[in-house]
Image (cartoon, rainbow, N blue to C red; front, side):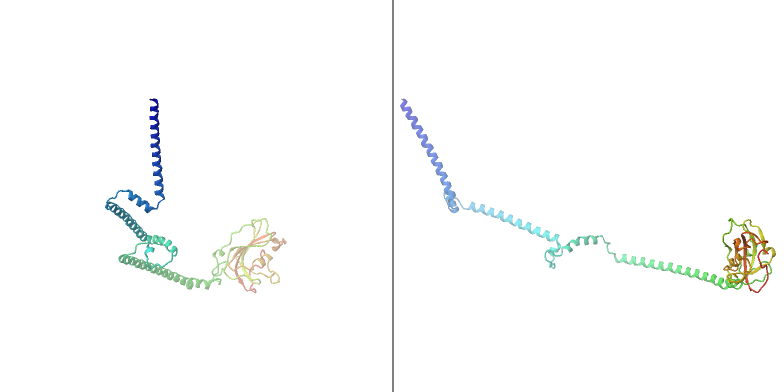
Length: 343
C-alpha cells in the first residue's frame, strides 16, 4: 500500500511539474508574441490587431472621428478669433500702426512717439476756446480799459500843462520884475545919508555894529580869515582901495582899542600893496588878509603879532583881532577916513 501511495504522489508531482512547465511555456510564448508584435511595422500591427478584433459596424467609429474633428476645428476657430481680436485691440491702442500714410521704417519716429503723450498732456491743460459772445465781451472790456487809460493820461497832461503855465508866469514876474529891479540896484550906491552907507542888495546886518568877543586860542600862529557874511559884489584885488568899517580888539582879552563905528566914519585903504611890490599902507595882516574877499562881506581877521604892530611902542600889543565890513571899492586917488587902524 505504501508503494502505491508513493507512486500516486509521484504521479501528482509529475502532473504539477507538467502544468507548471505548460504555464511557463505559455507565458514565454506570449512574451515572444508581444516582442514580435512590437518589432513588426505599424501597419502590420494594426492589421494583426484588427484581425484579432471582432468585426463591427463602421458607423460608430466614423461618428466618433467626426465628433473629434469637429471639436478640433471649433478649437482652431476659437483660437483664430481670439488672435484676430487681439490684433484689433493692438491696432486700436496704437494709432500709428493703422495709419496707411505712415511710411517710416521700423525704429523711425520713436522720438515723435515719445513726445506725443507730453504734447497731449500740455494741450489738455490749455483753456477752452472762447465762444463768439465771450470774445465780443472781452473786446468790449479791452476797449473800455483803453478809453479809461486815455482819459487819465489826458487829465494828467492837462494838469502838468496848467502847473507849467503857472510856474512860468511866476518865473516871468520874478525875472522881469523883482530880479530886474534887484539887478538895477544891487551893488549900486544908494541915495542915503545914514551911516554906514550900504550899496544896494547888501545884507541888512551890515547896518548894525557887530557883537565882538575875544579869541578862544592861546595865540594866533598864522593869519586866519573867518567869514561871517558872504558878499555878492566885486572881488577885492591887489592894488584896490577898499572902504571898510572895522573894530579892533586885543586877541586874548577882547579889549577894544579902535572902531570906525565910534567915529561914524568909514575907512578907505589900499590893500595888496606888498603883493604889488610896493610899500604897504596898513599893517601886513590887513594888506594881505583883505585881498580876494567880496564887497558886502563881514569877516574876522585874526592877525599874529609879527603881521600886526610887532609890539611897537604906542600901538596895541600882541595878537590882534579885527571885525571888518567891506563896503565898497573906491578910486585909489580918493581920500578920507583913517589911514592906519589904531591911530
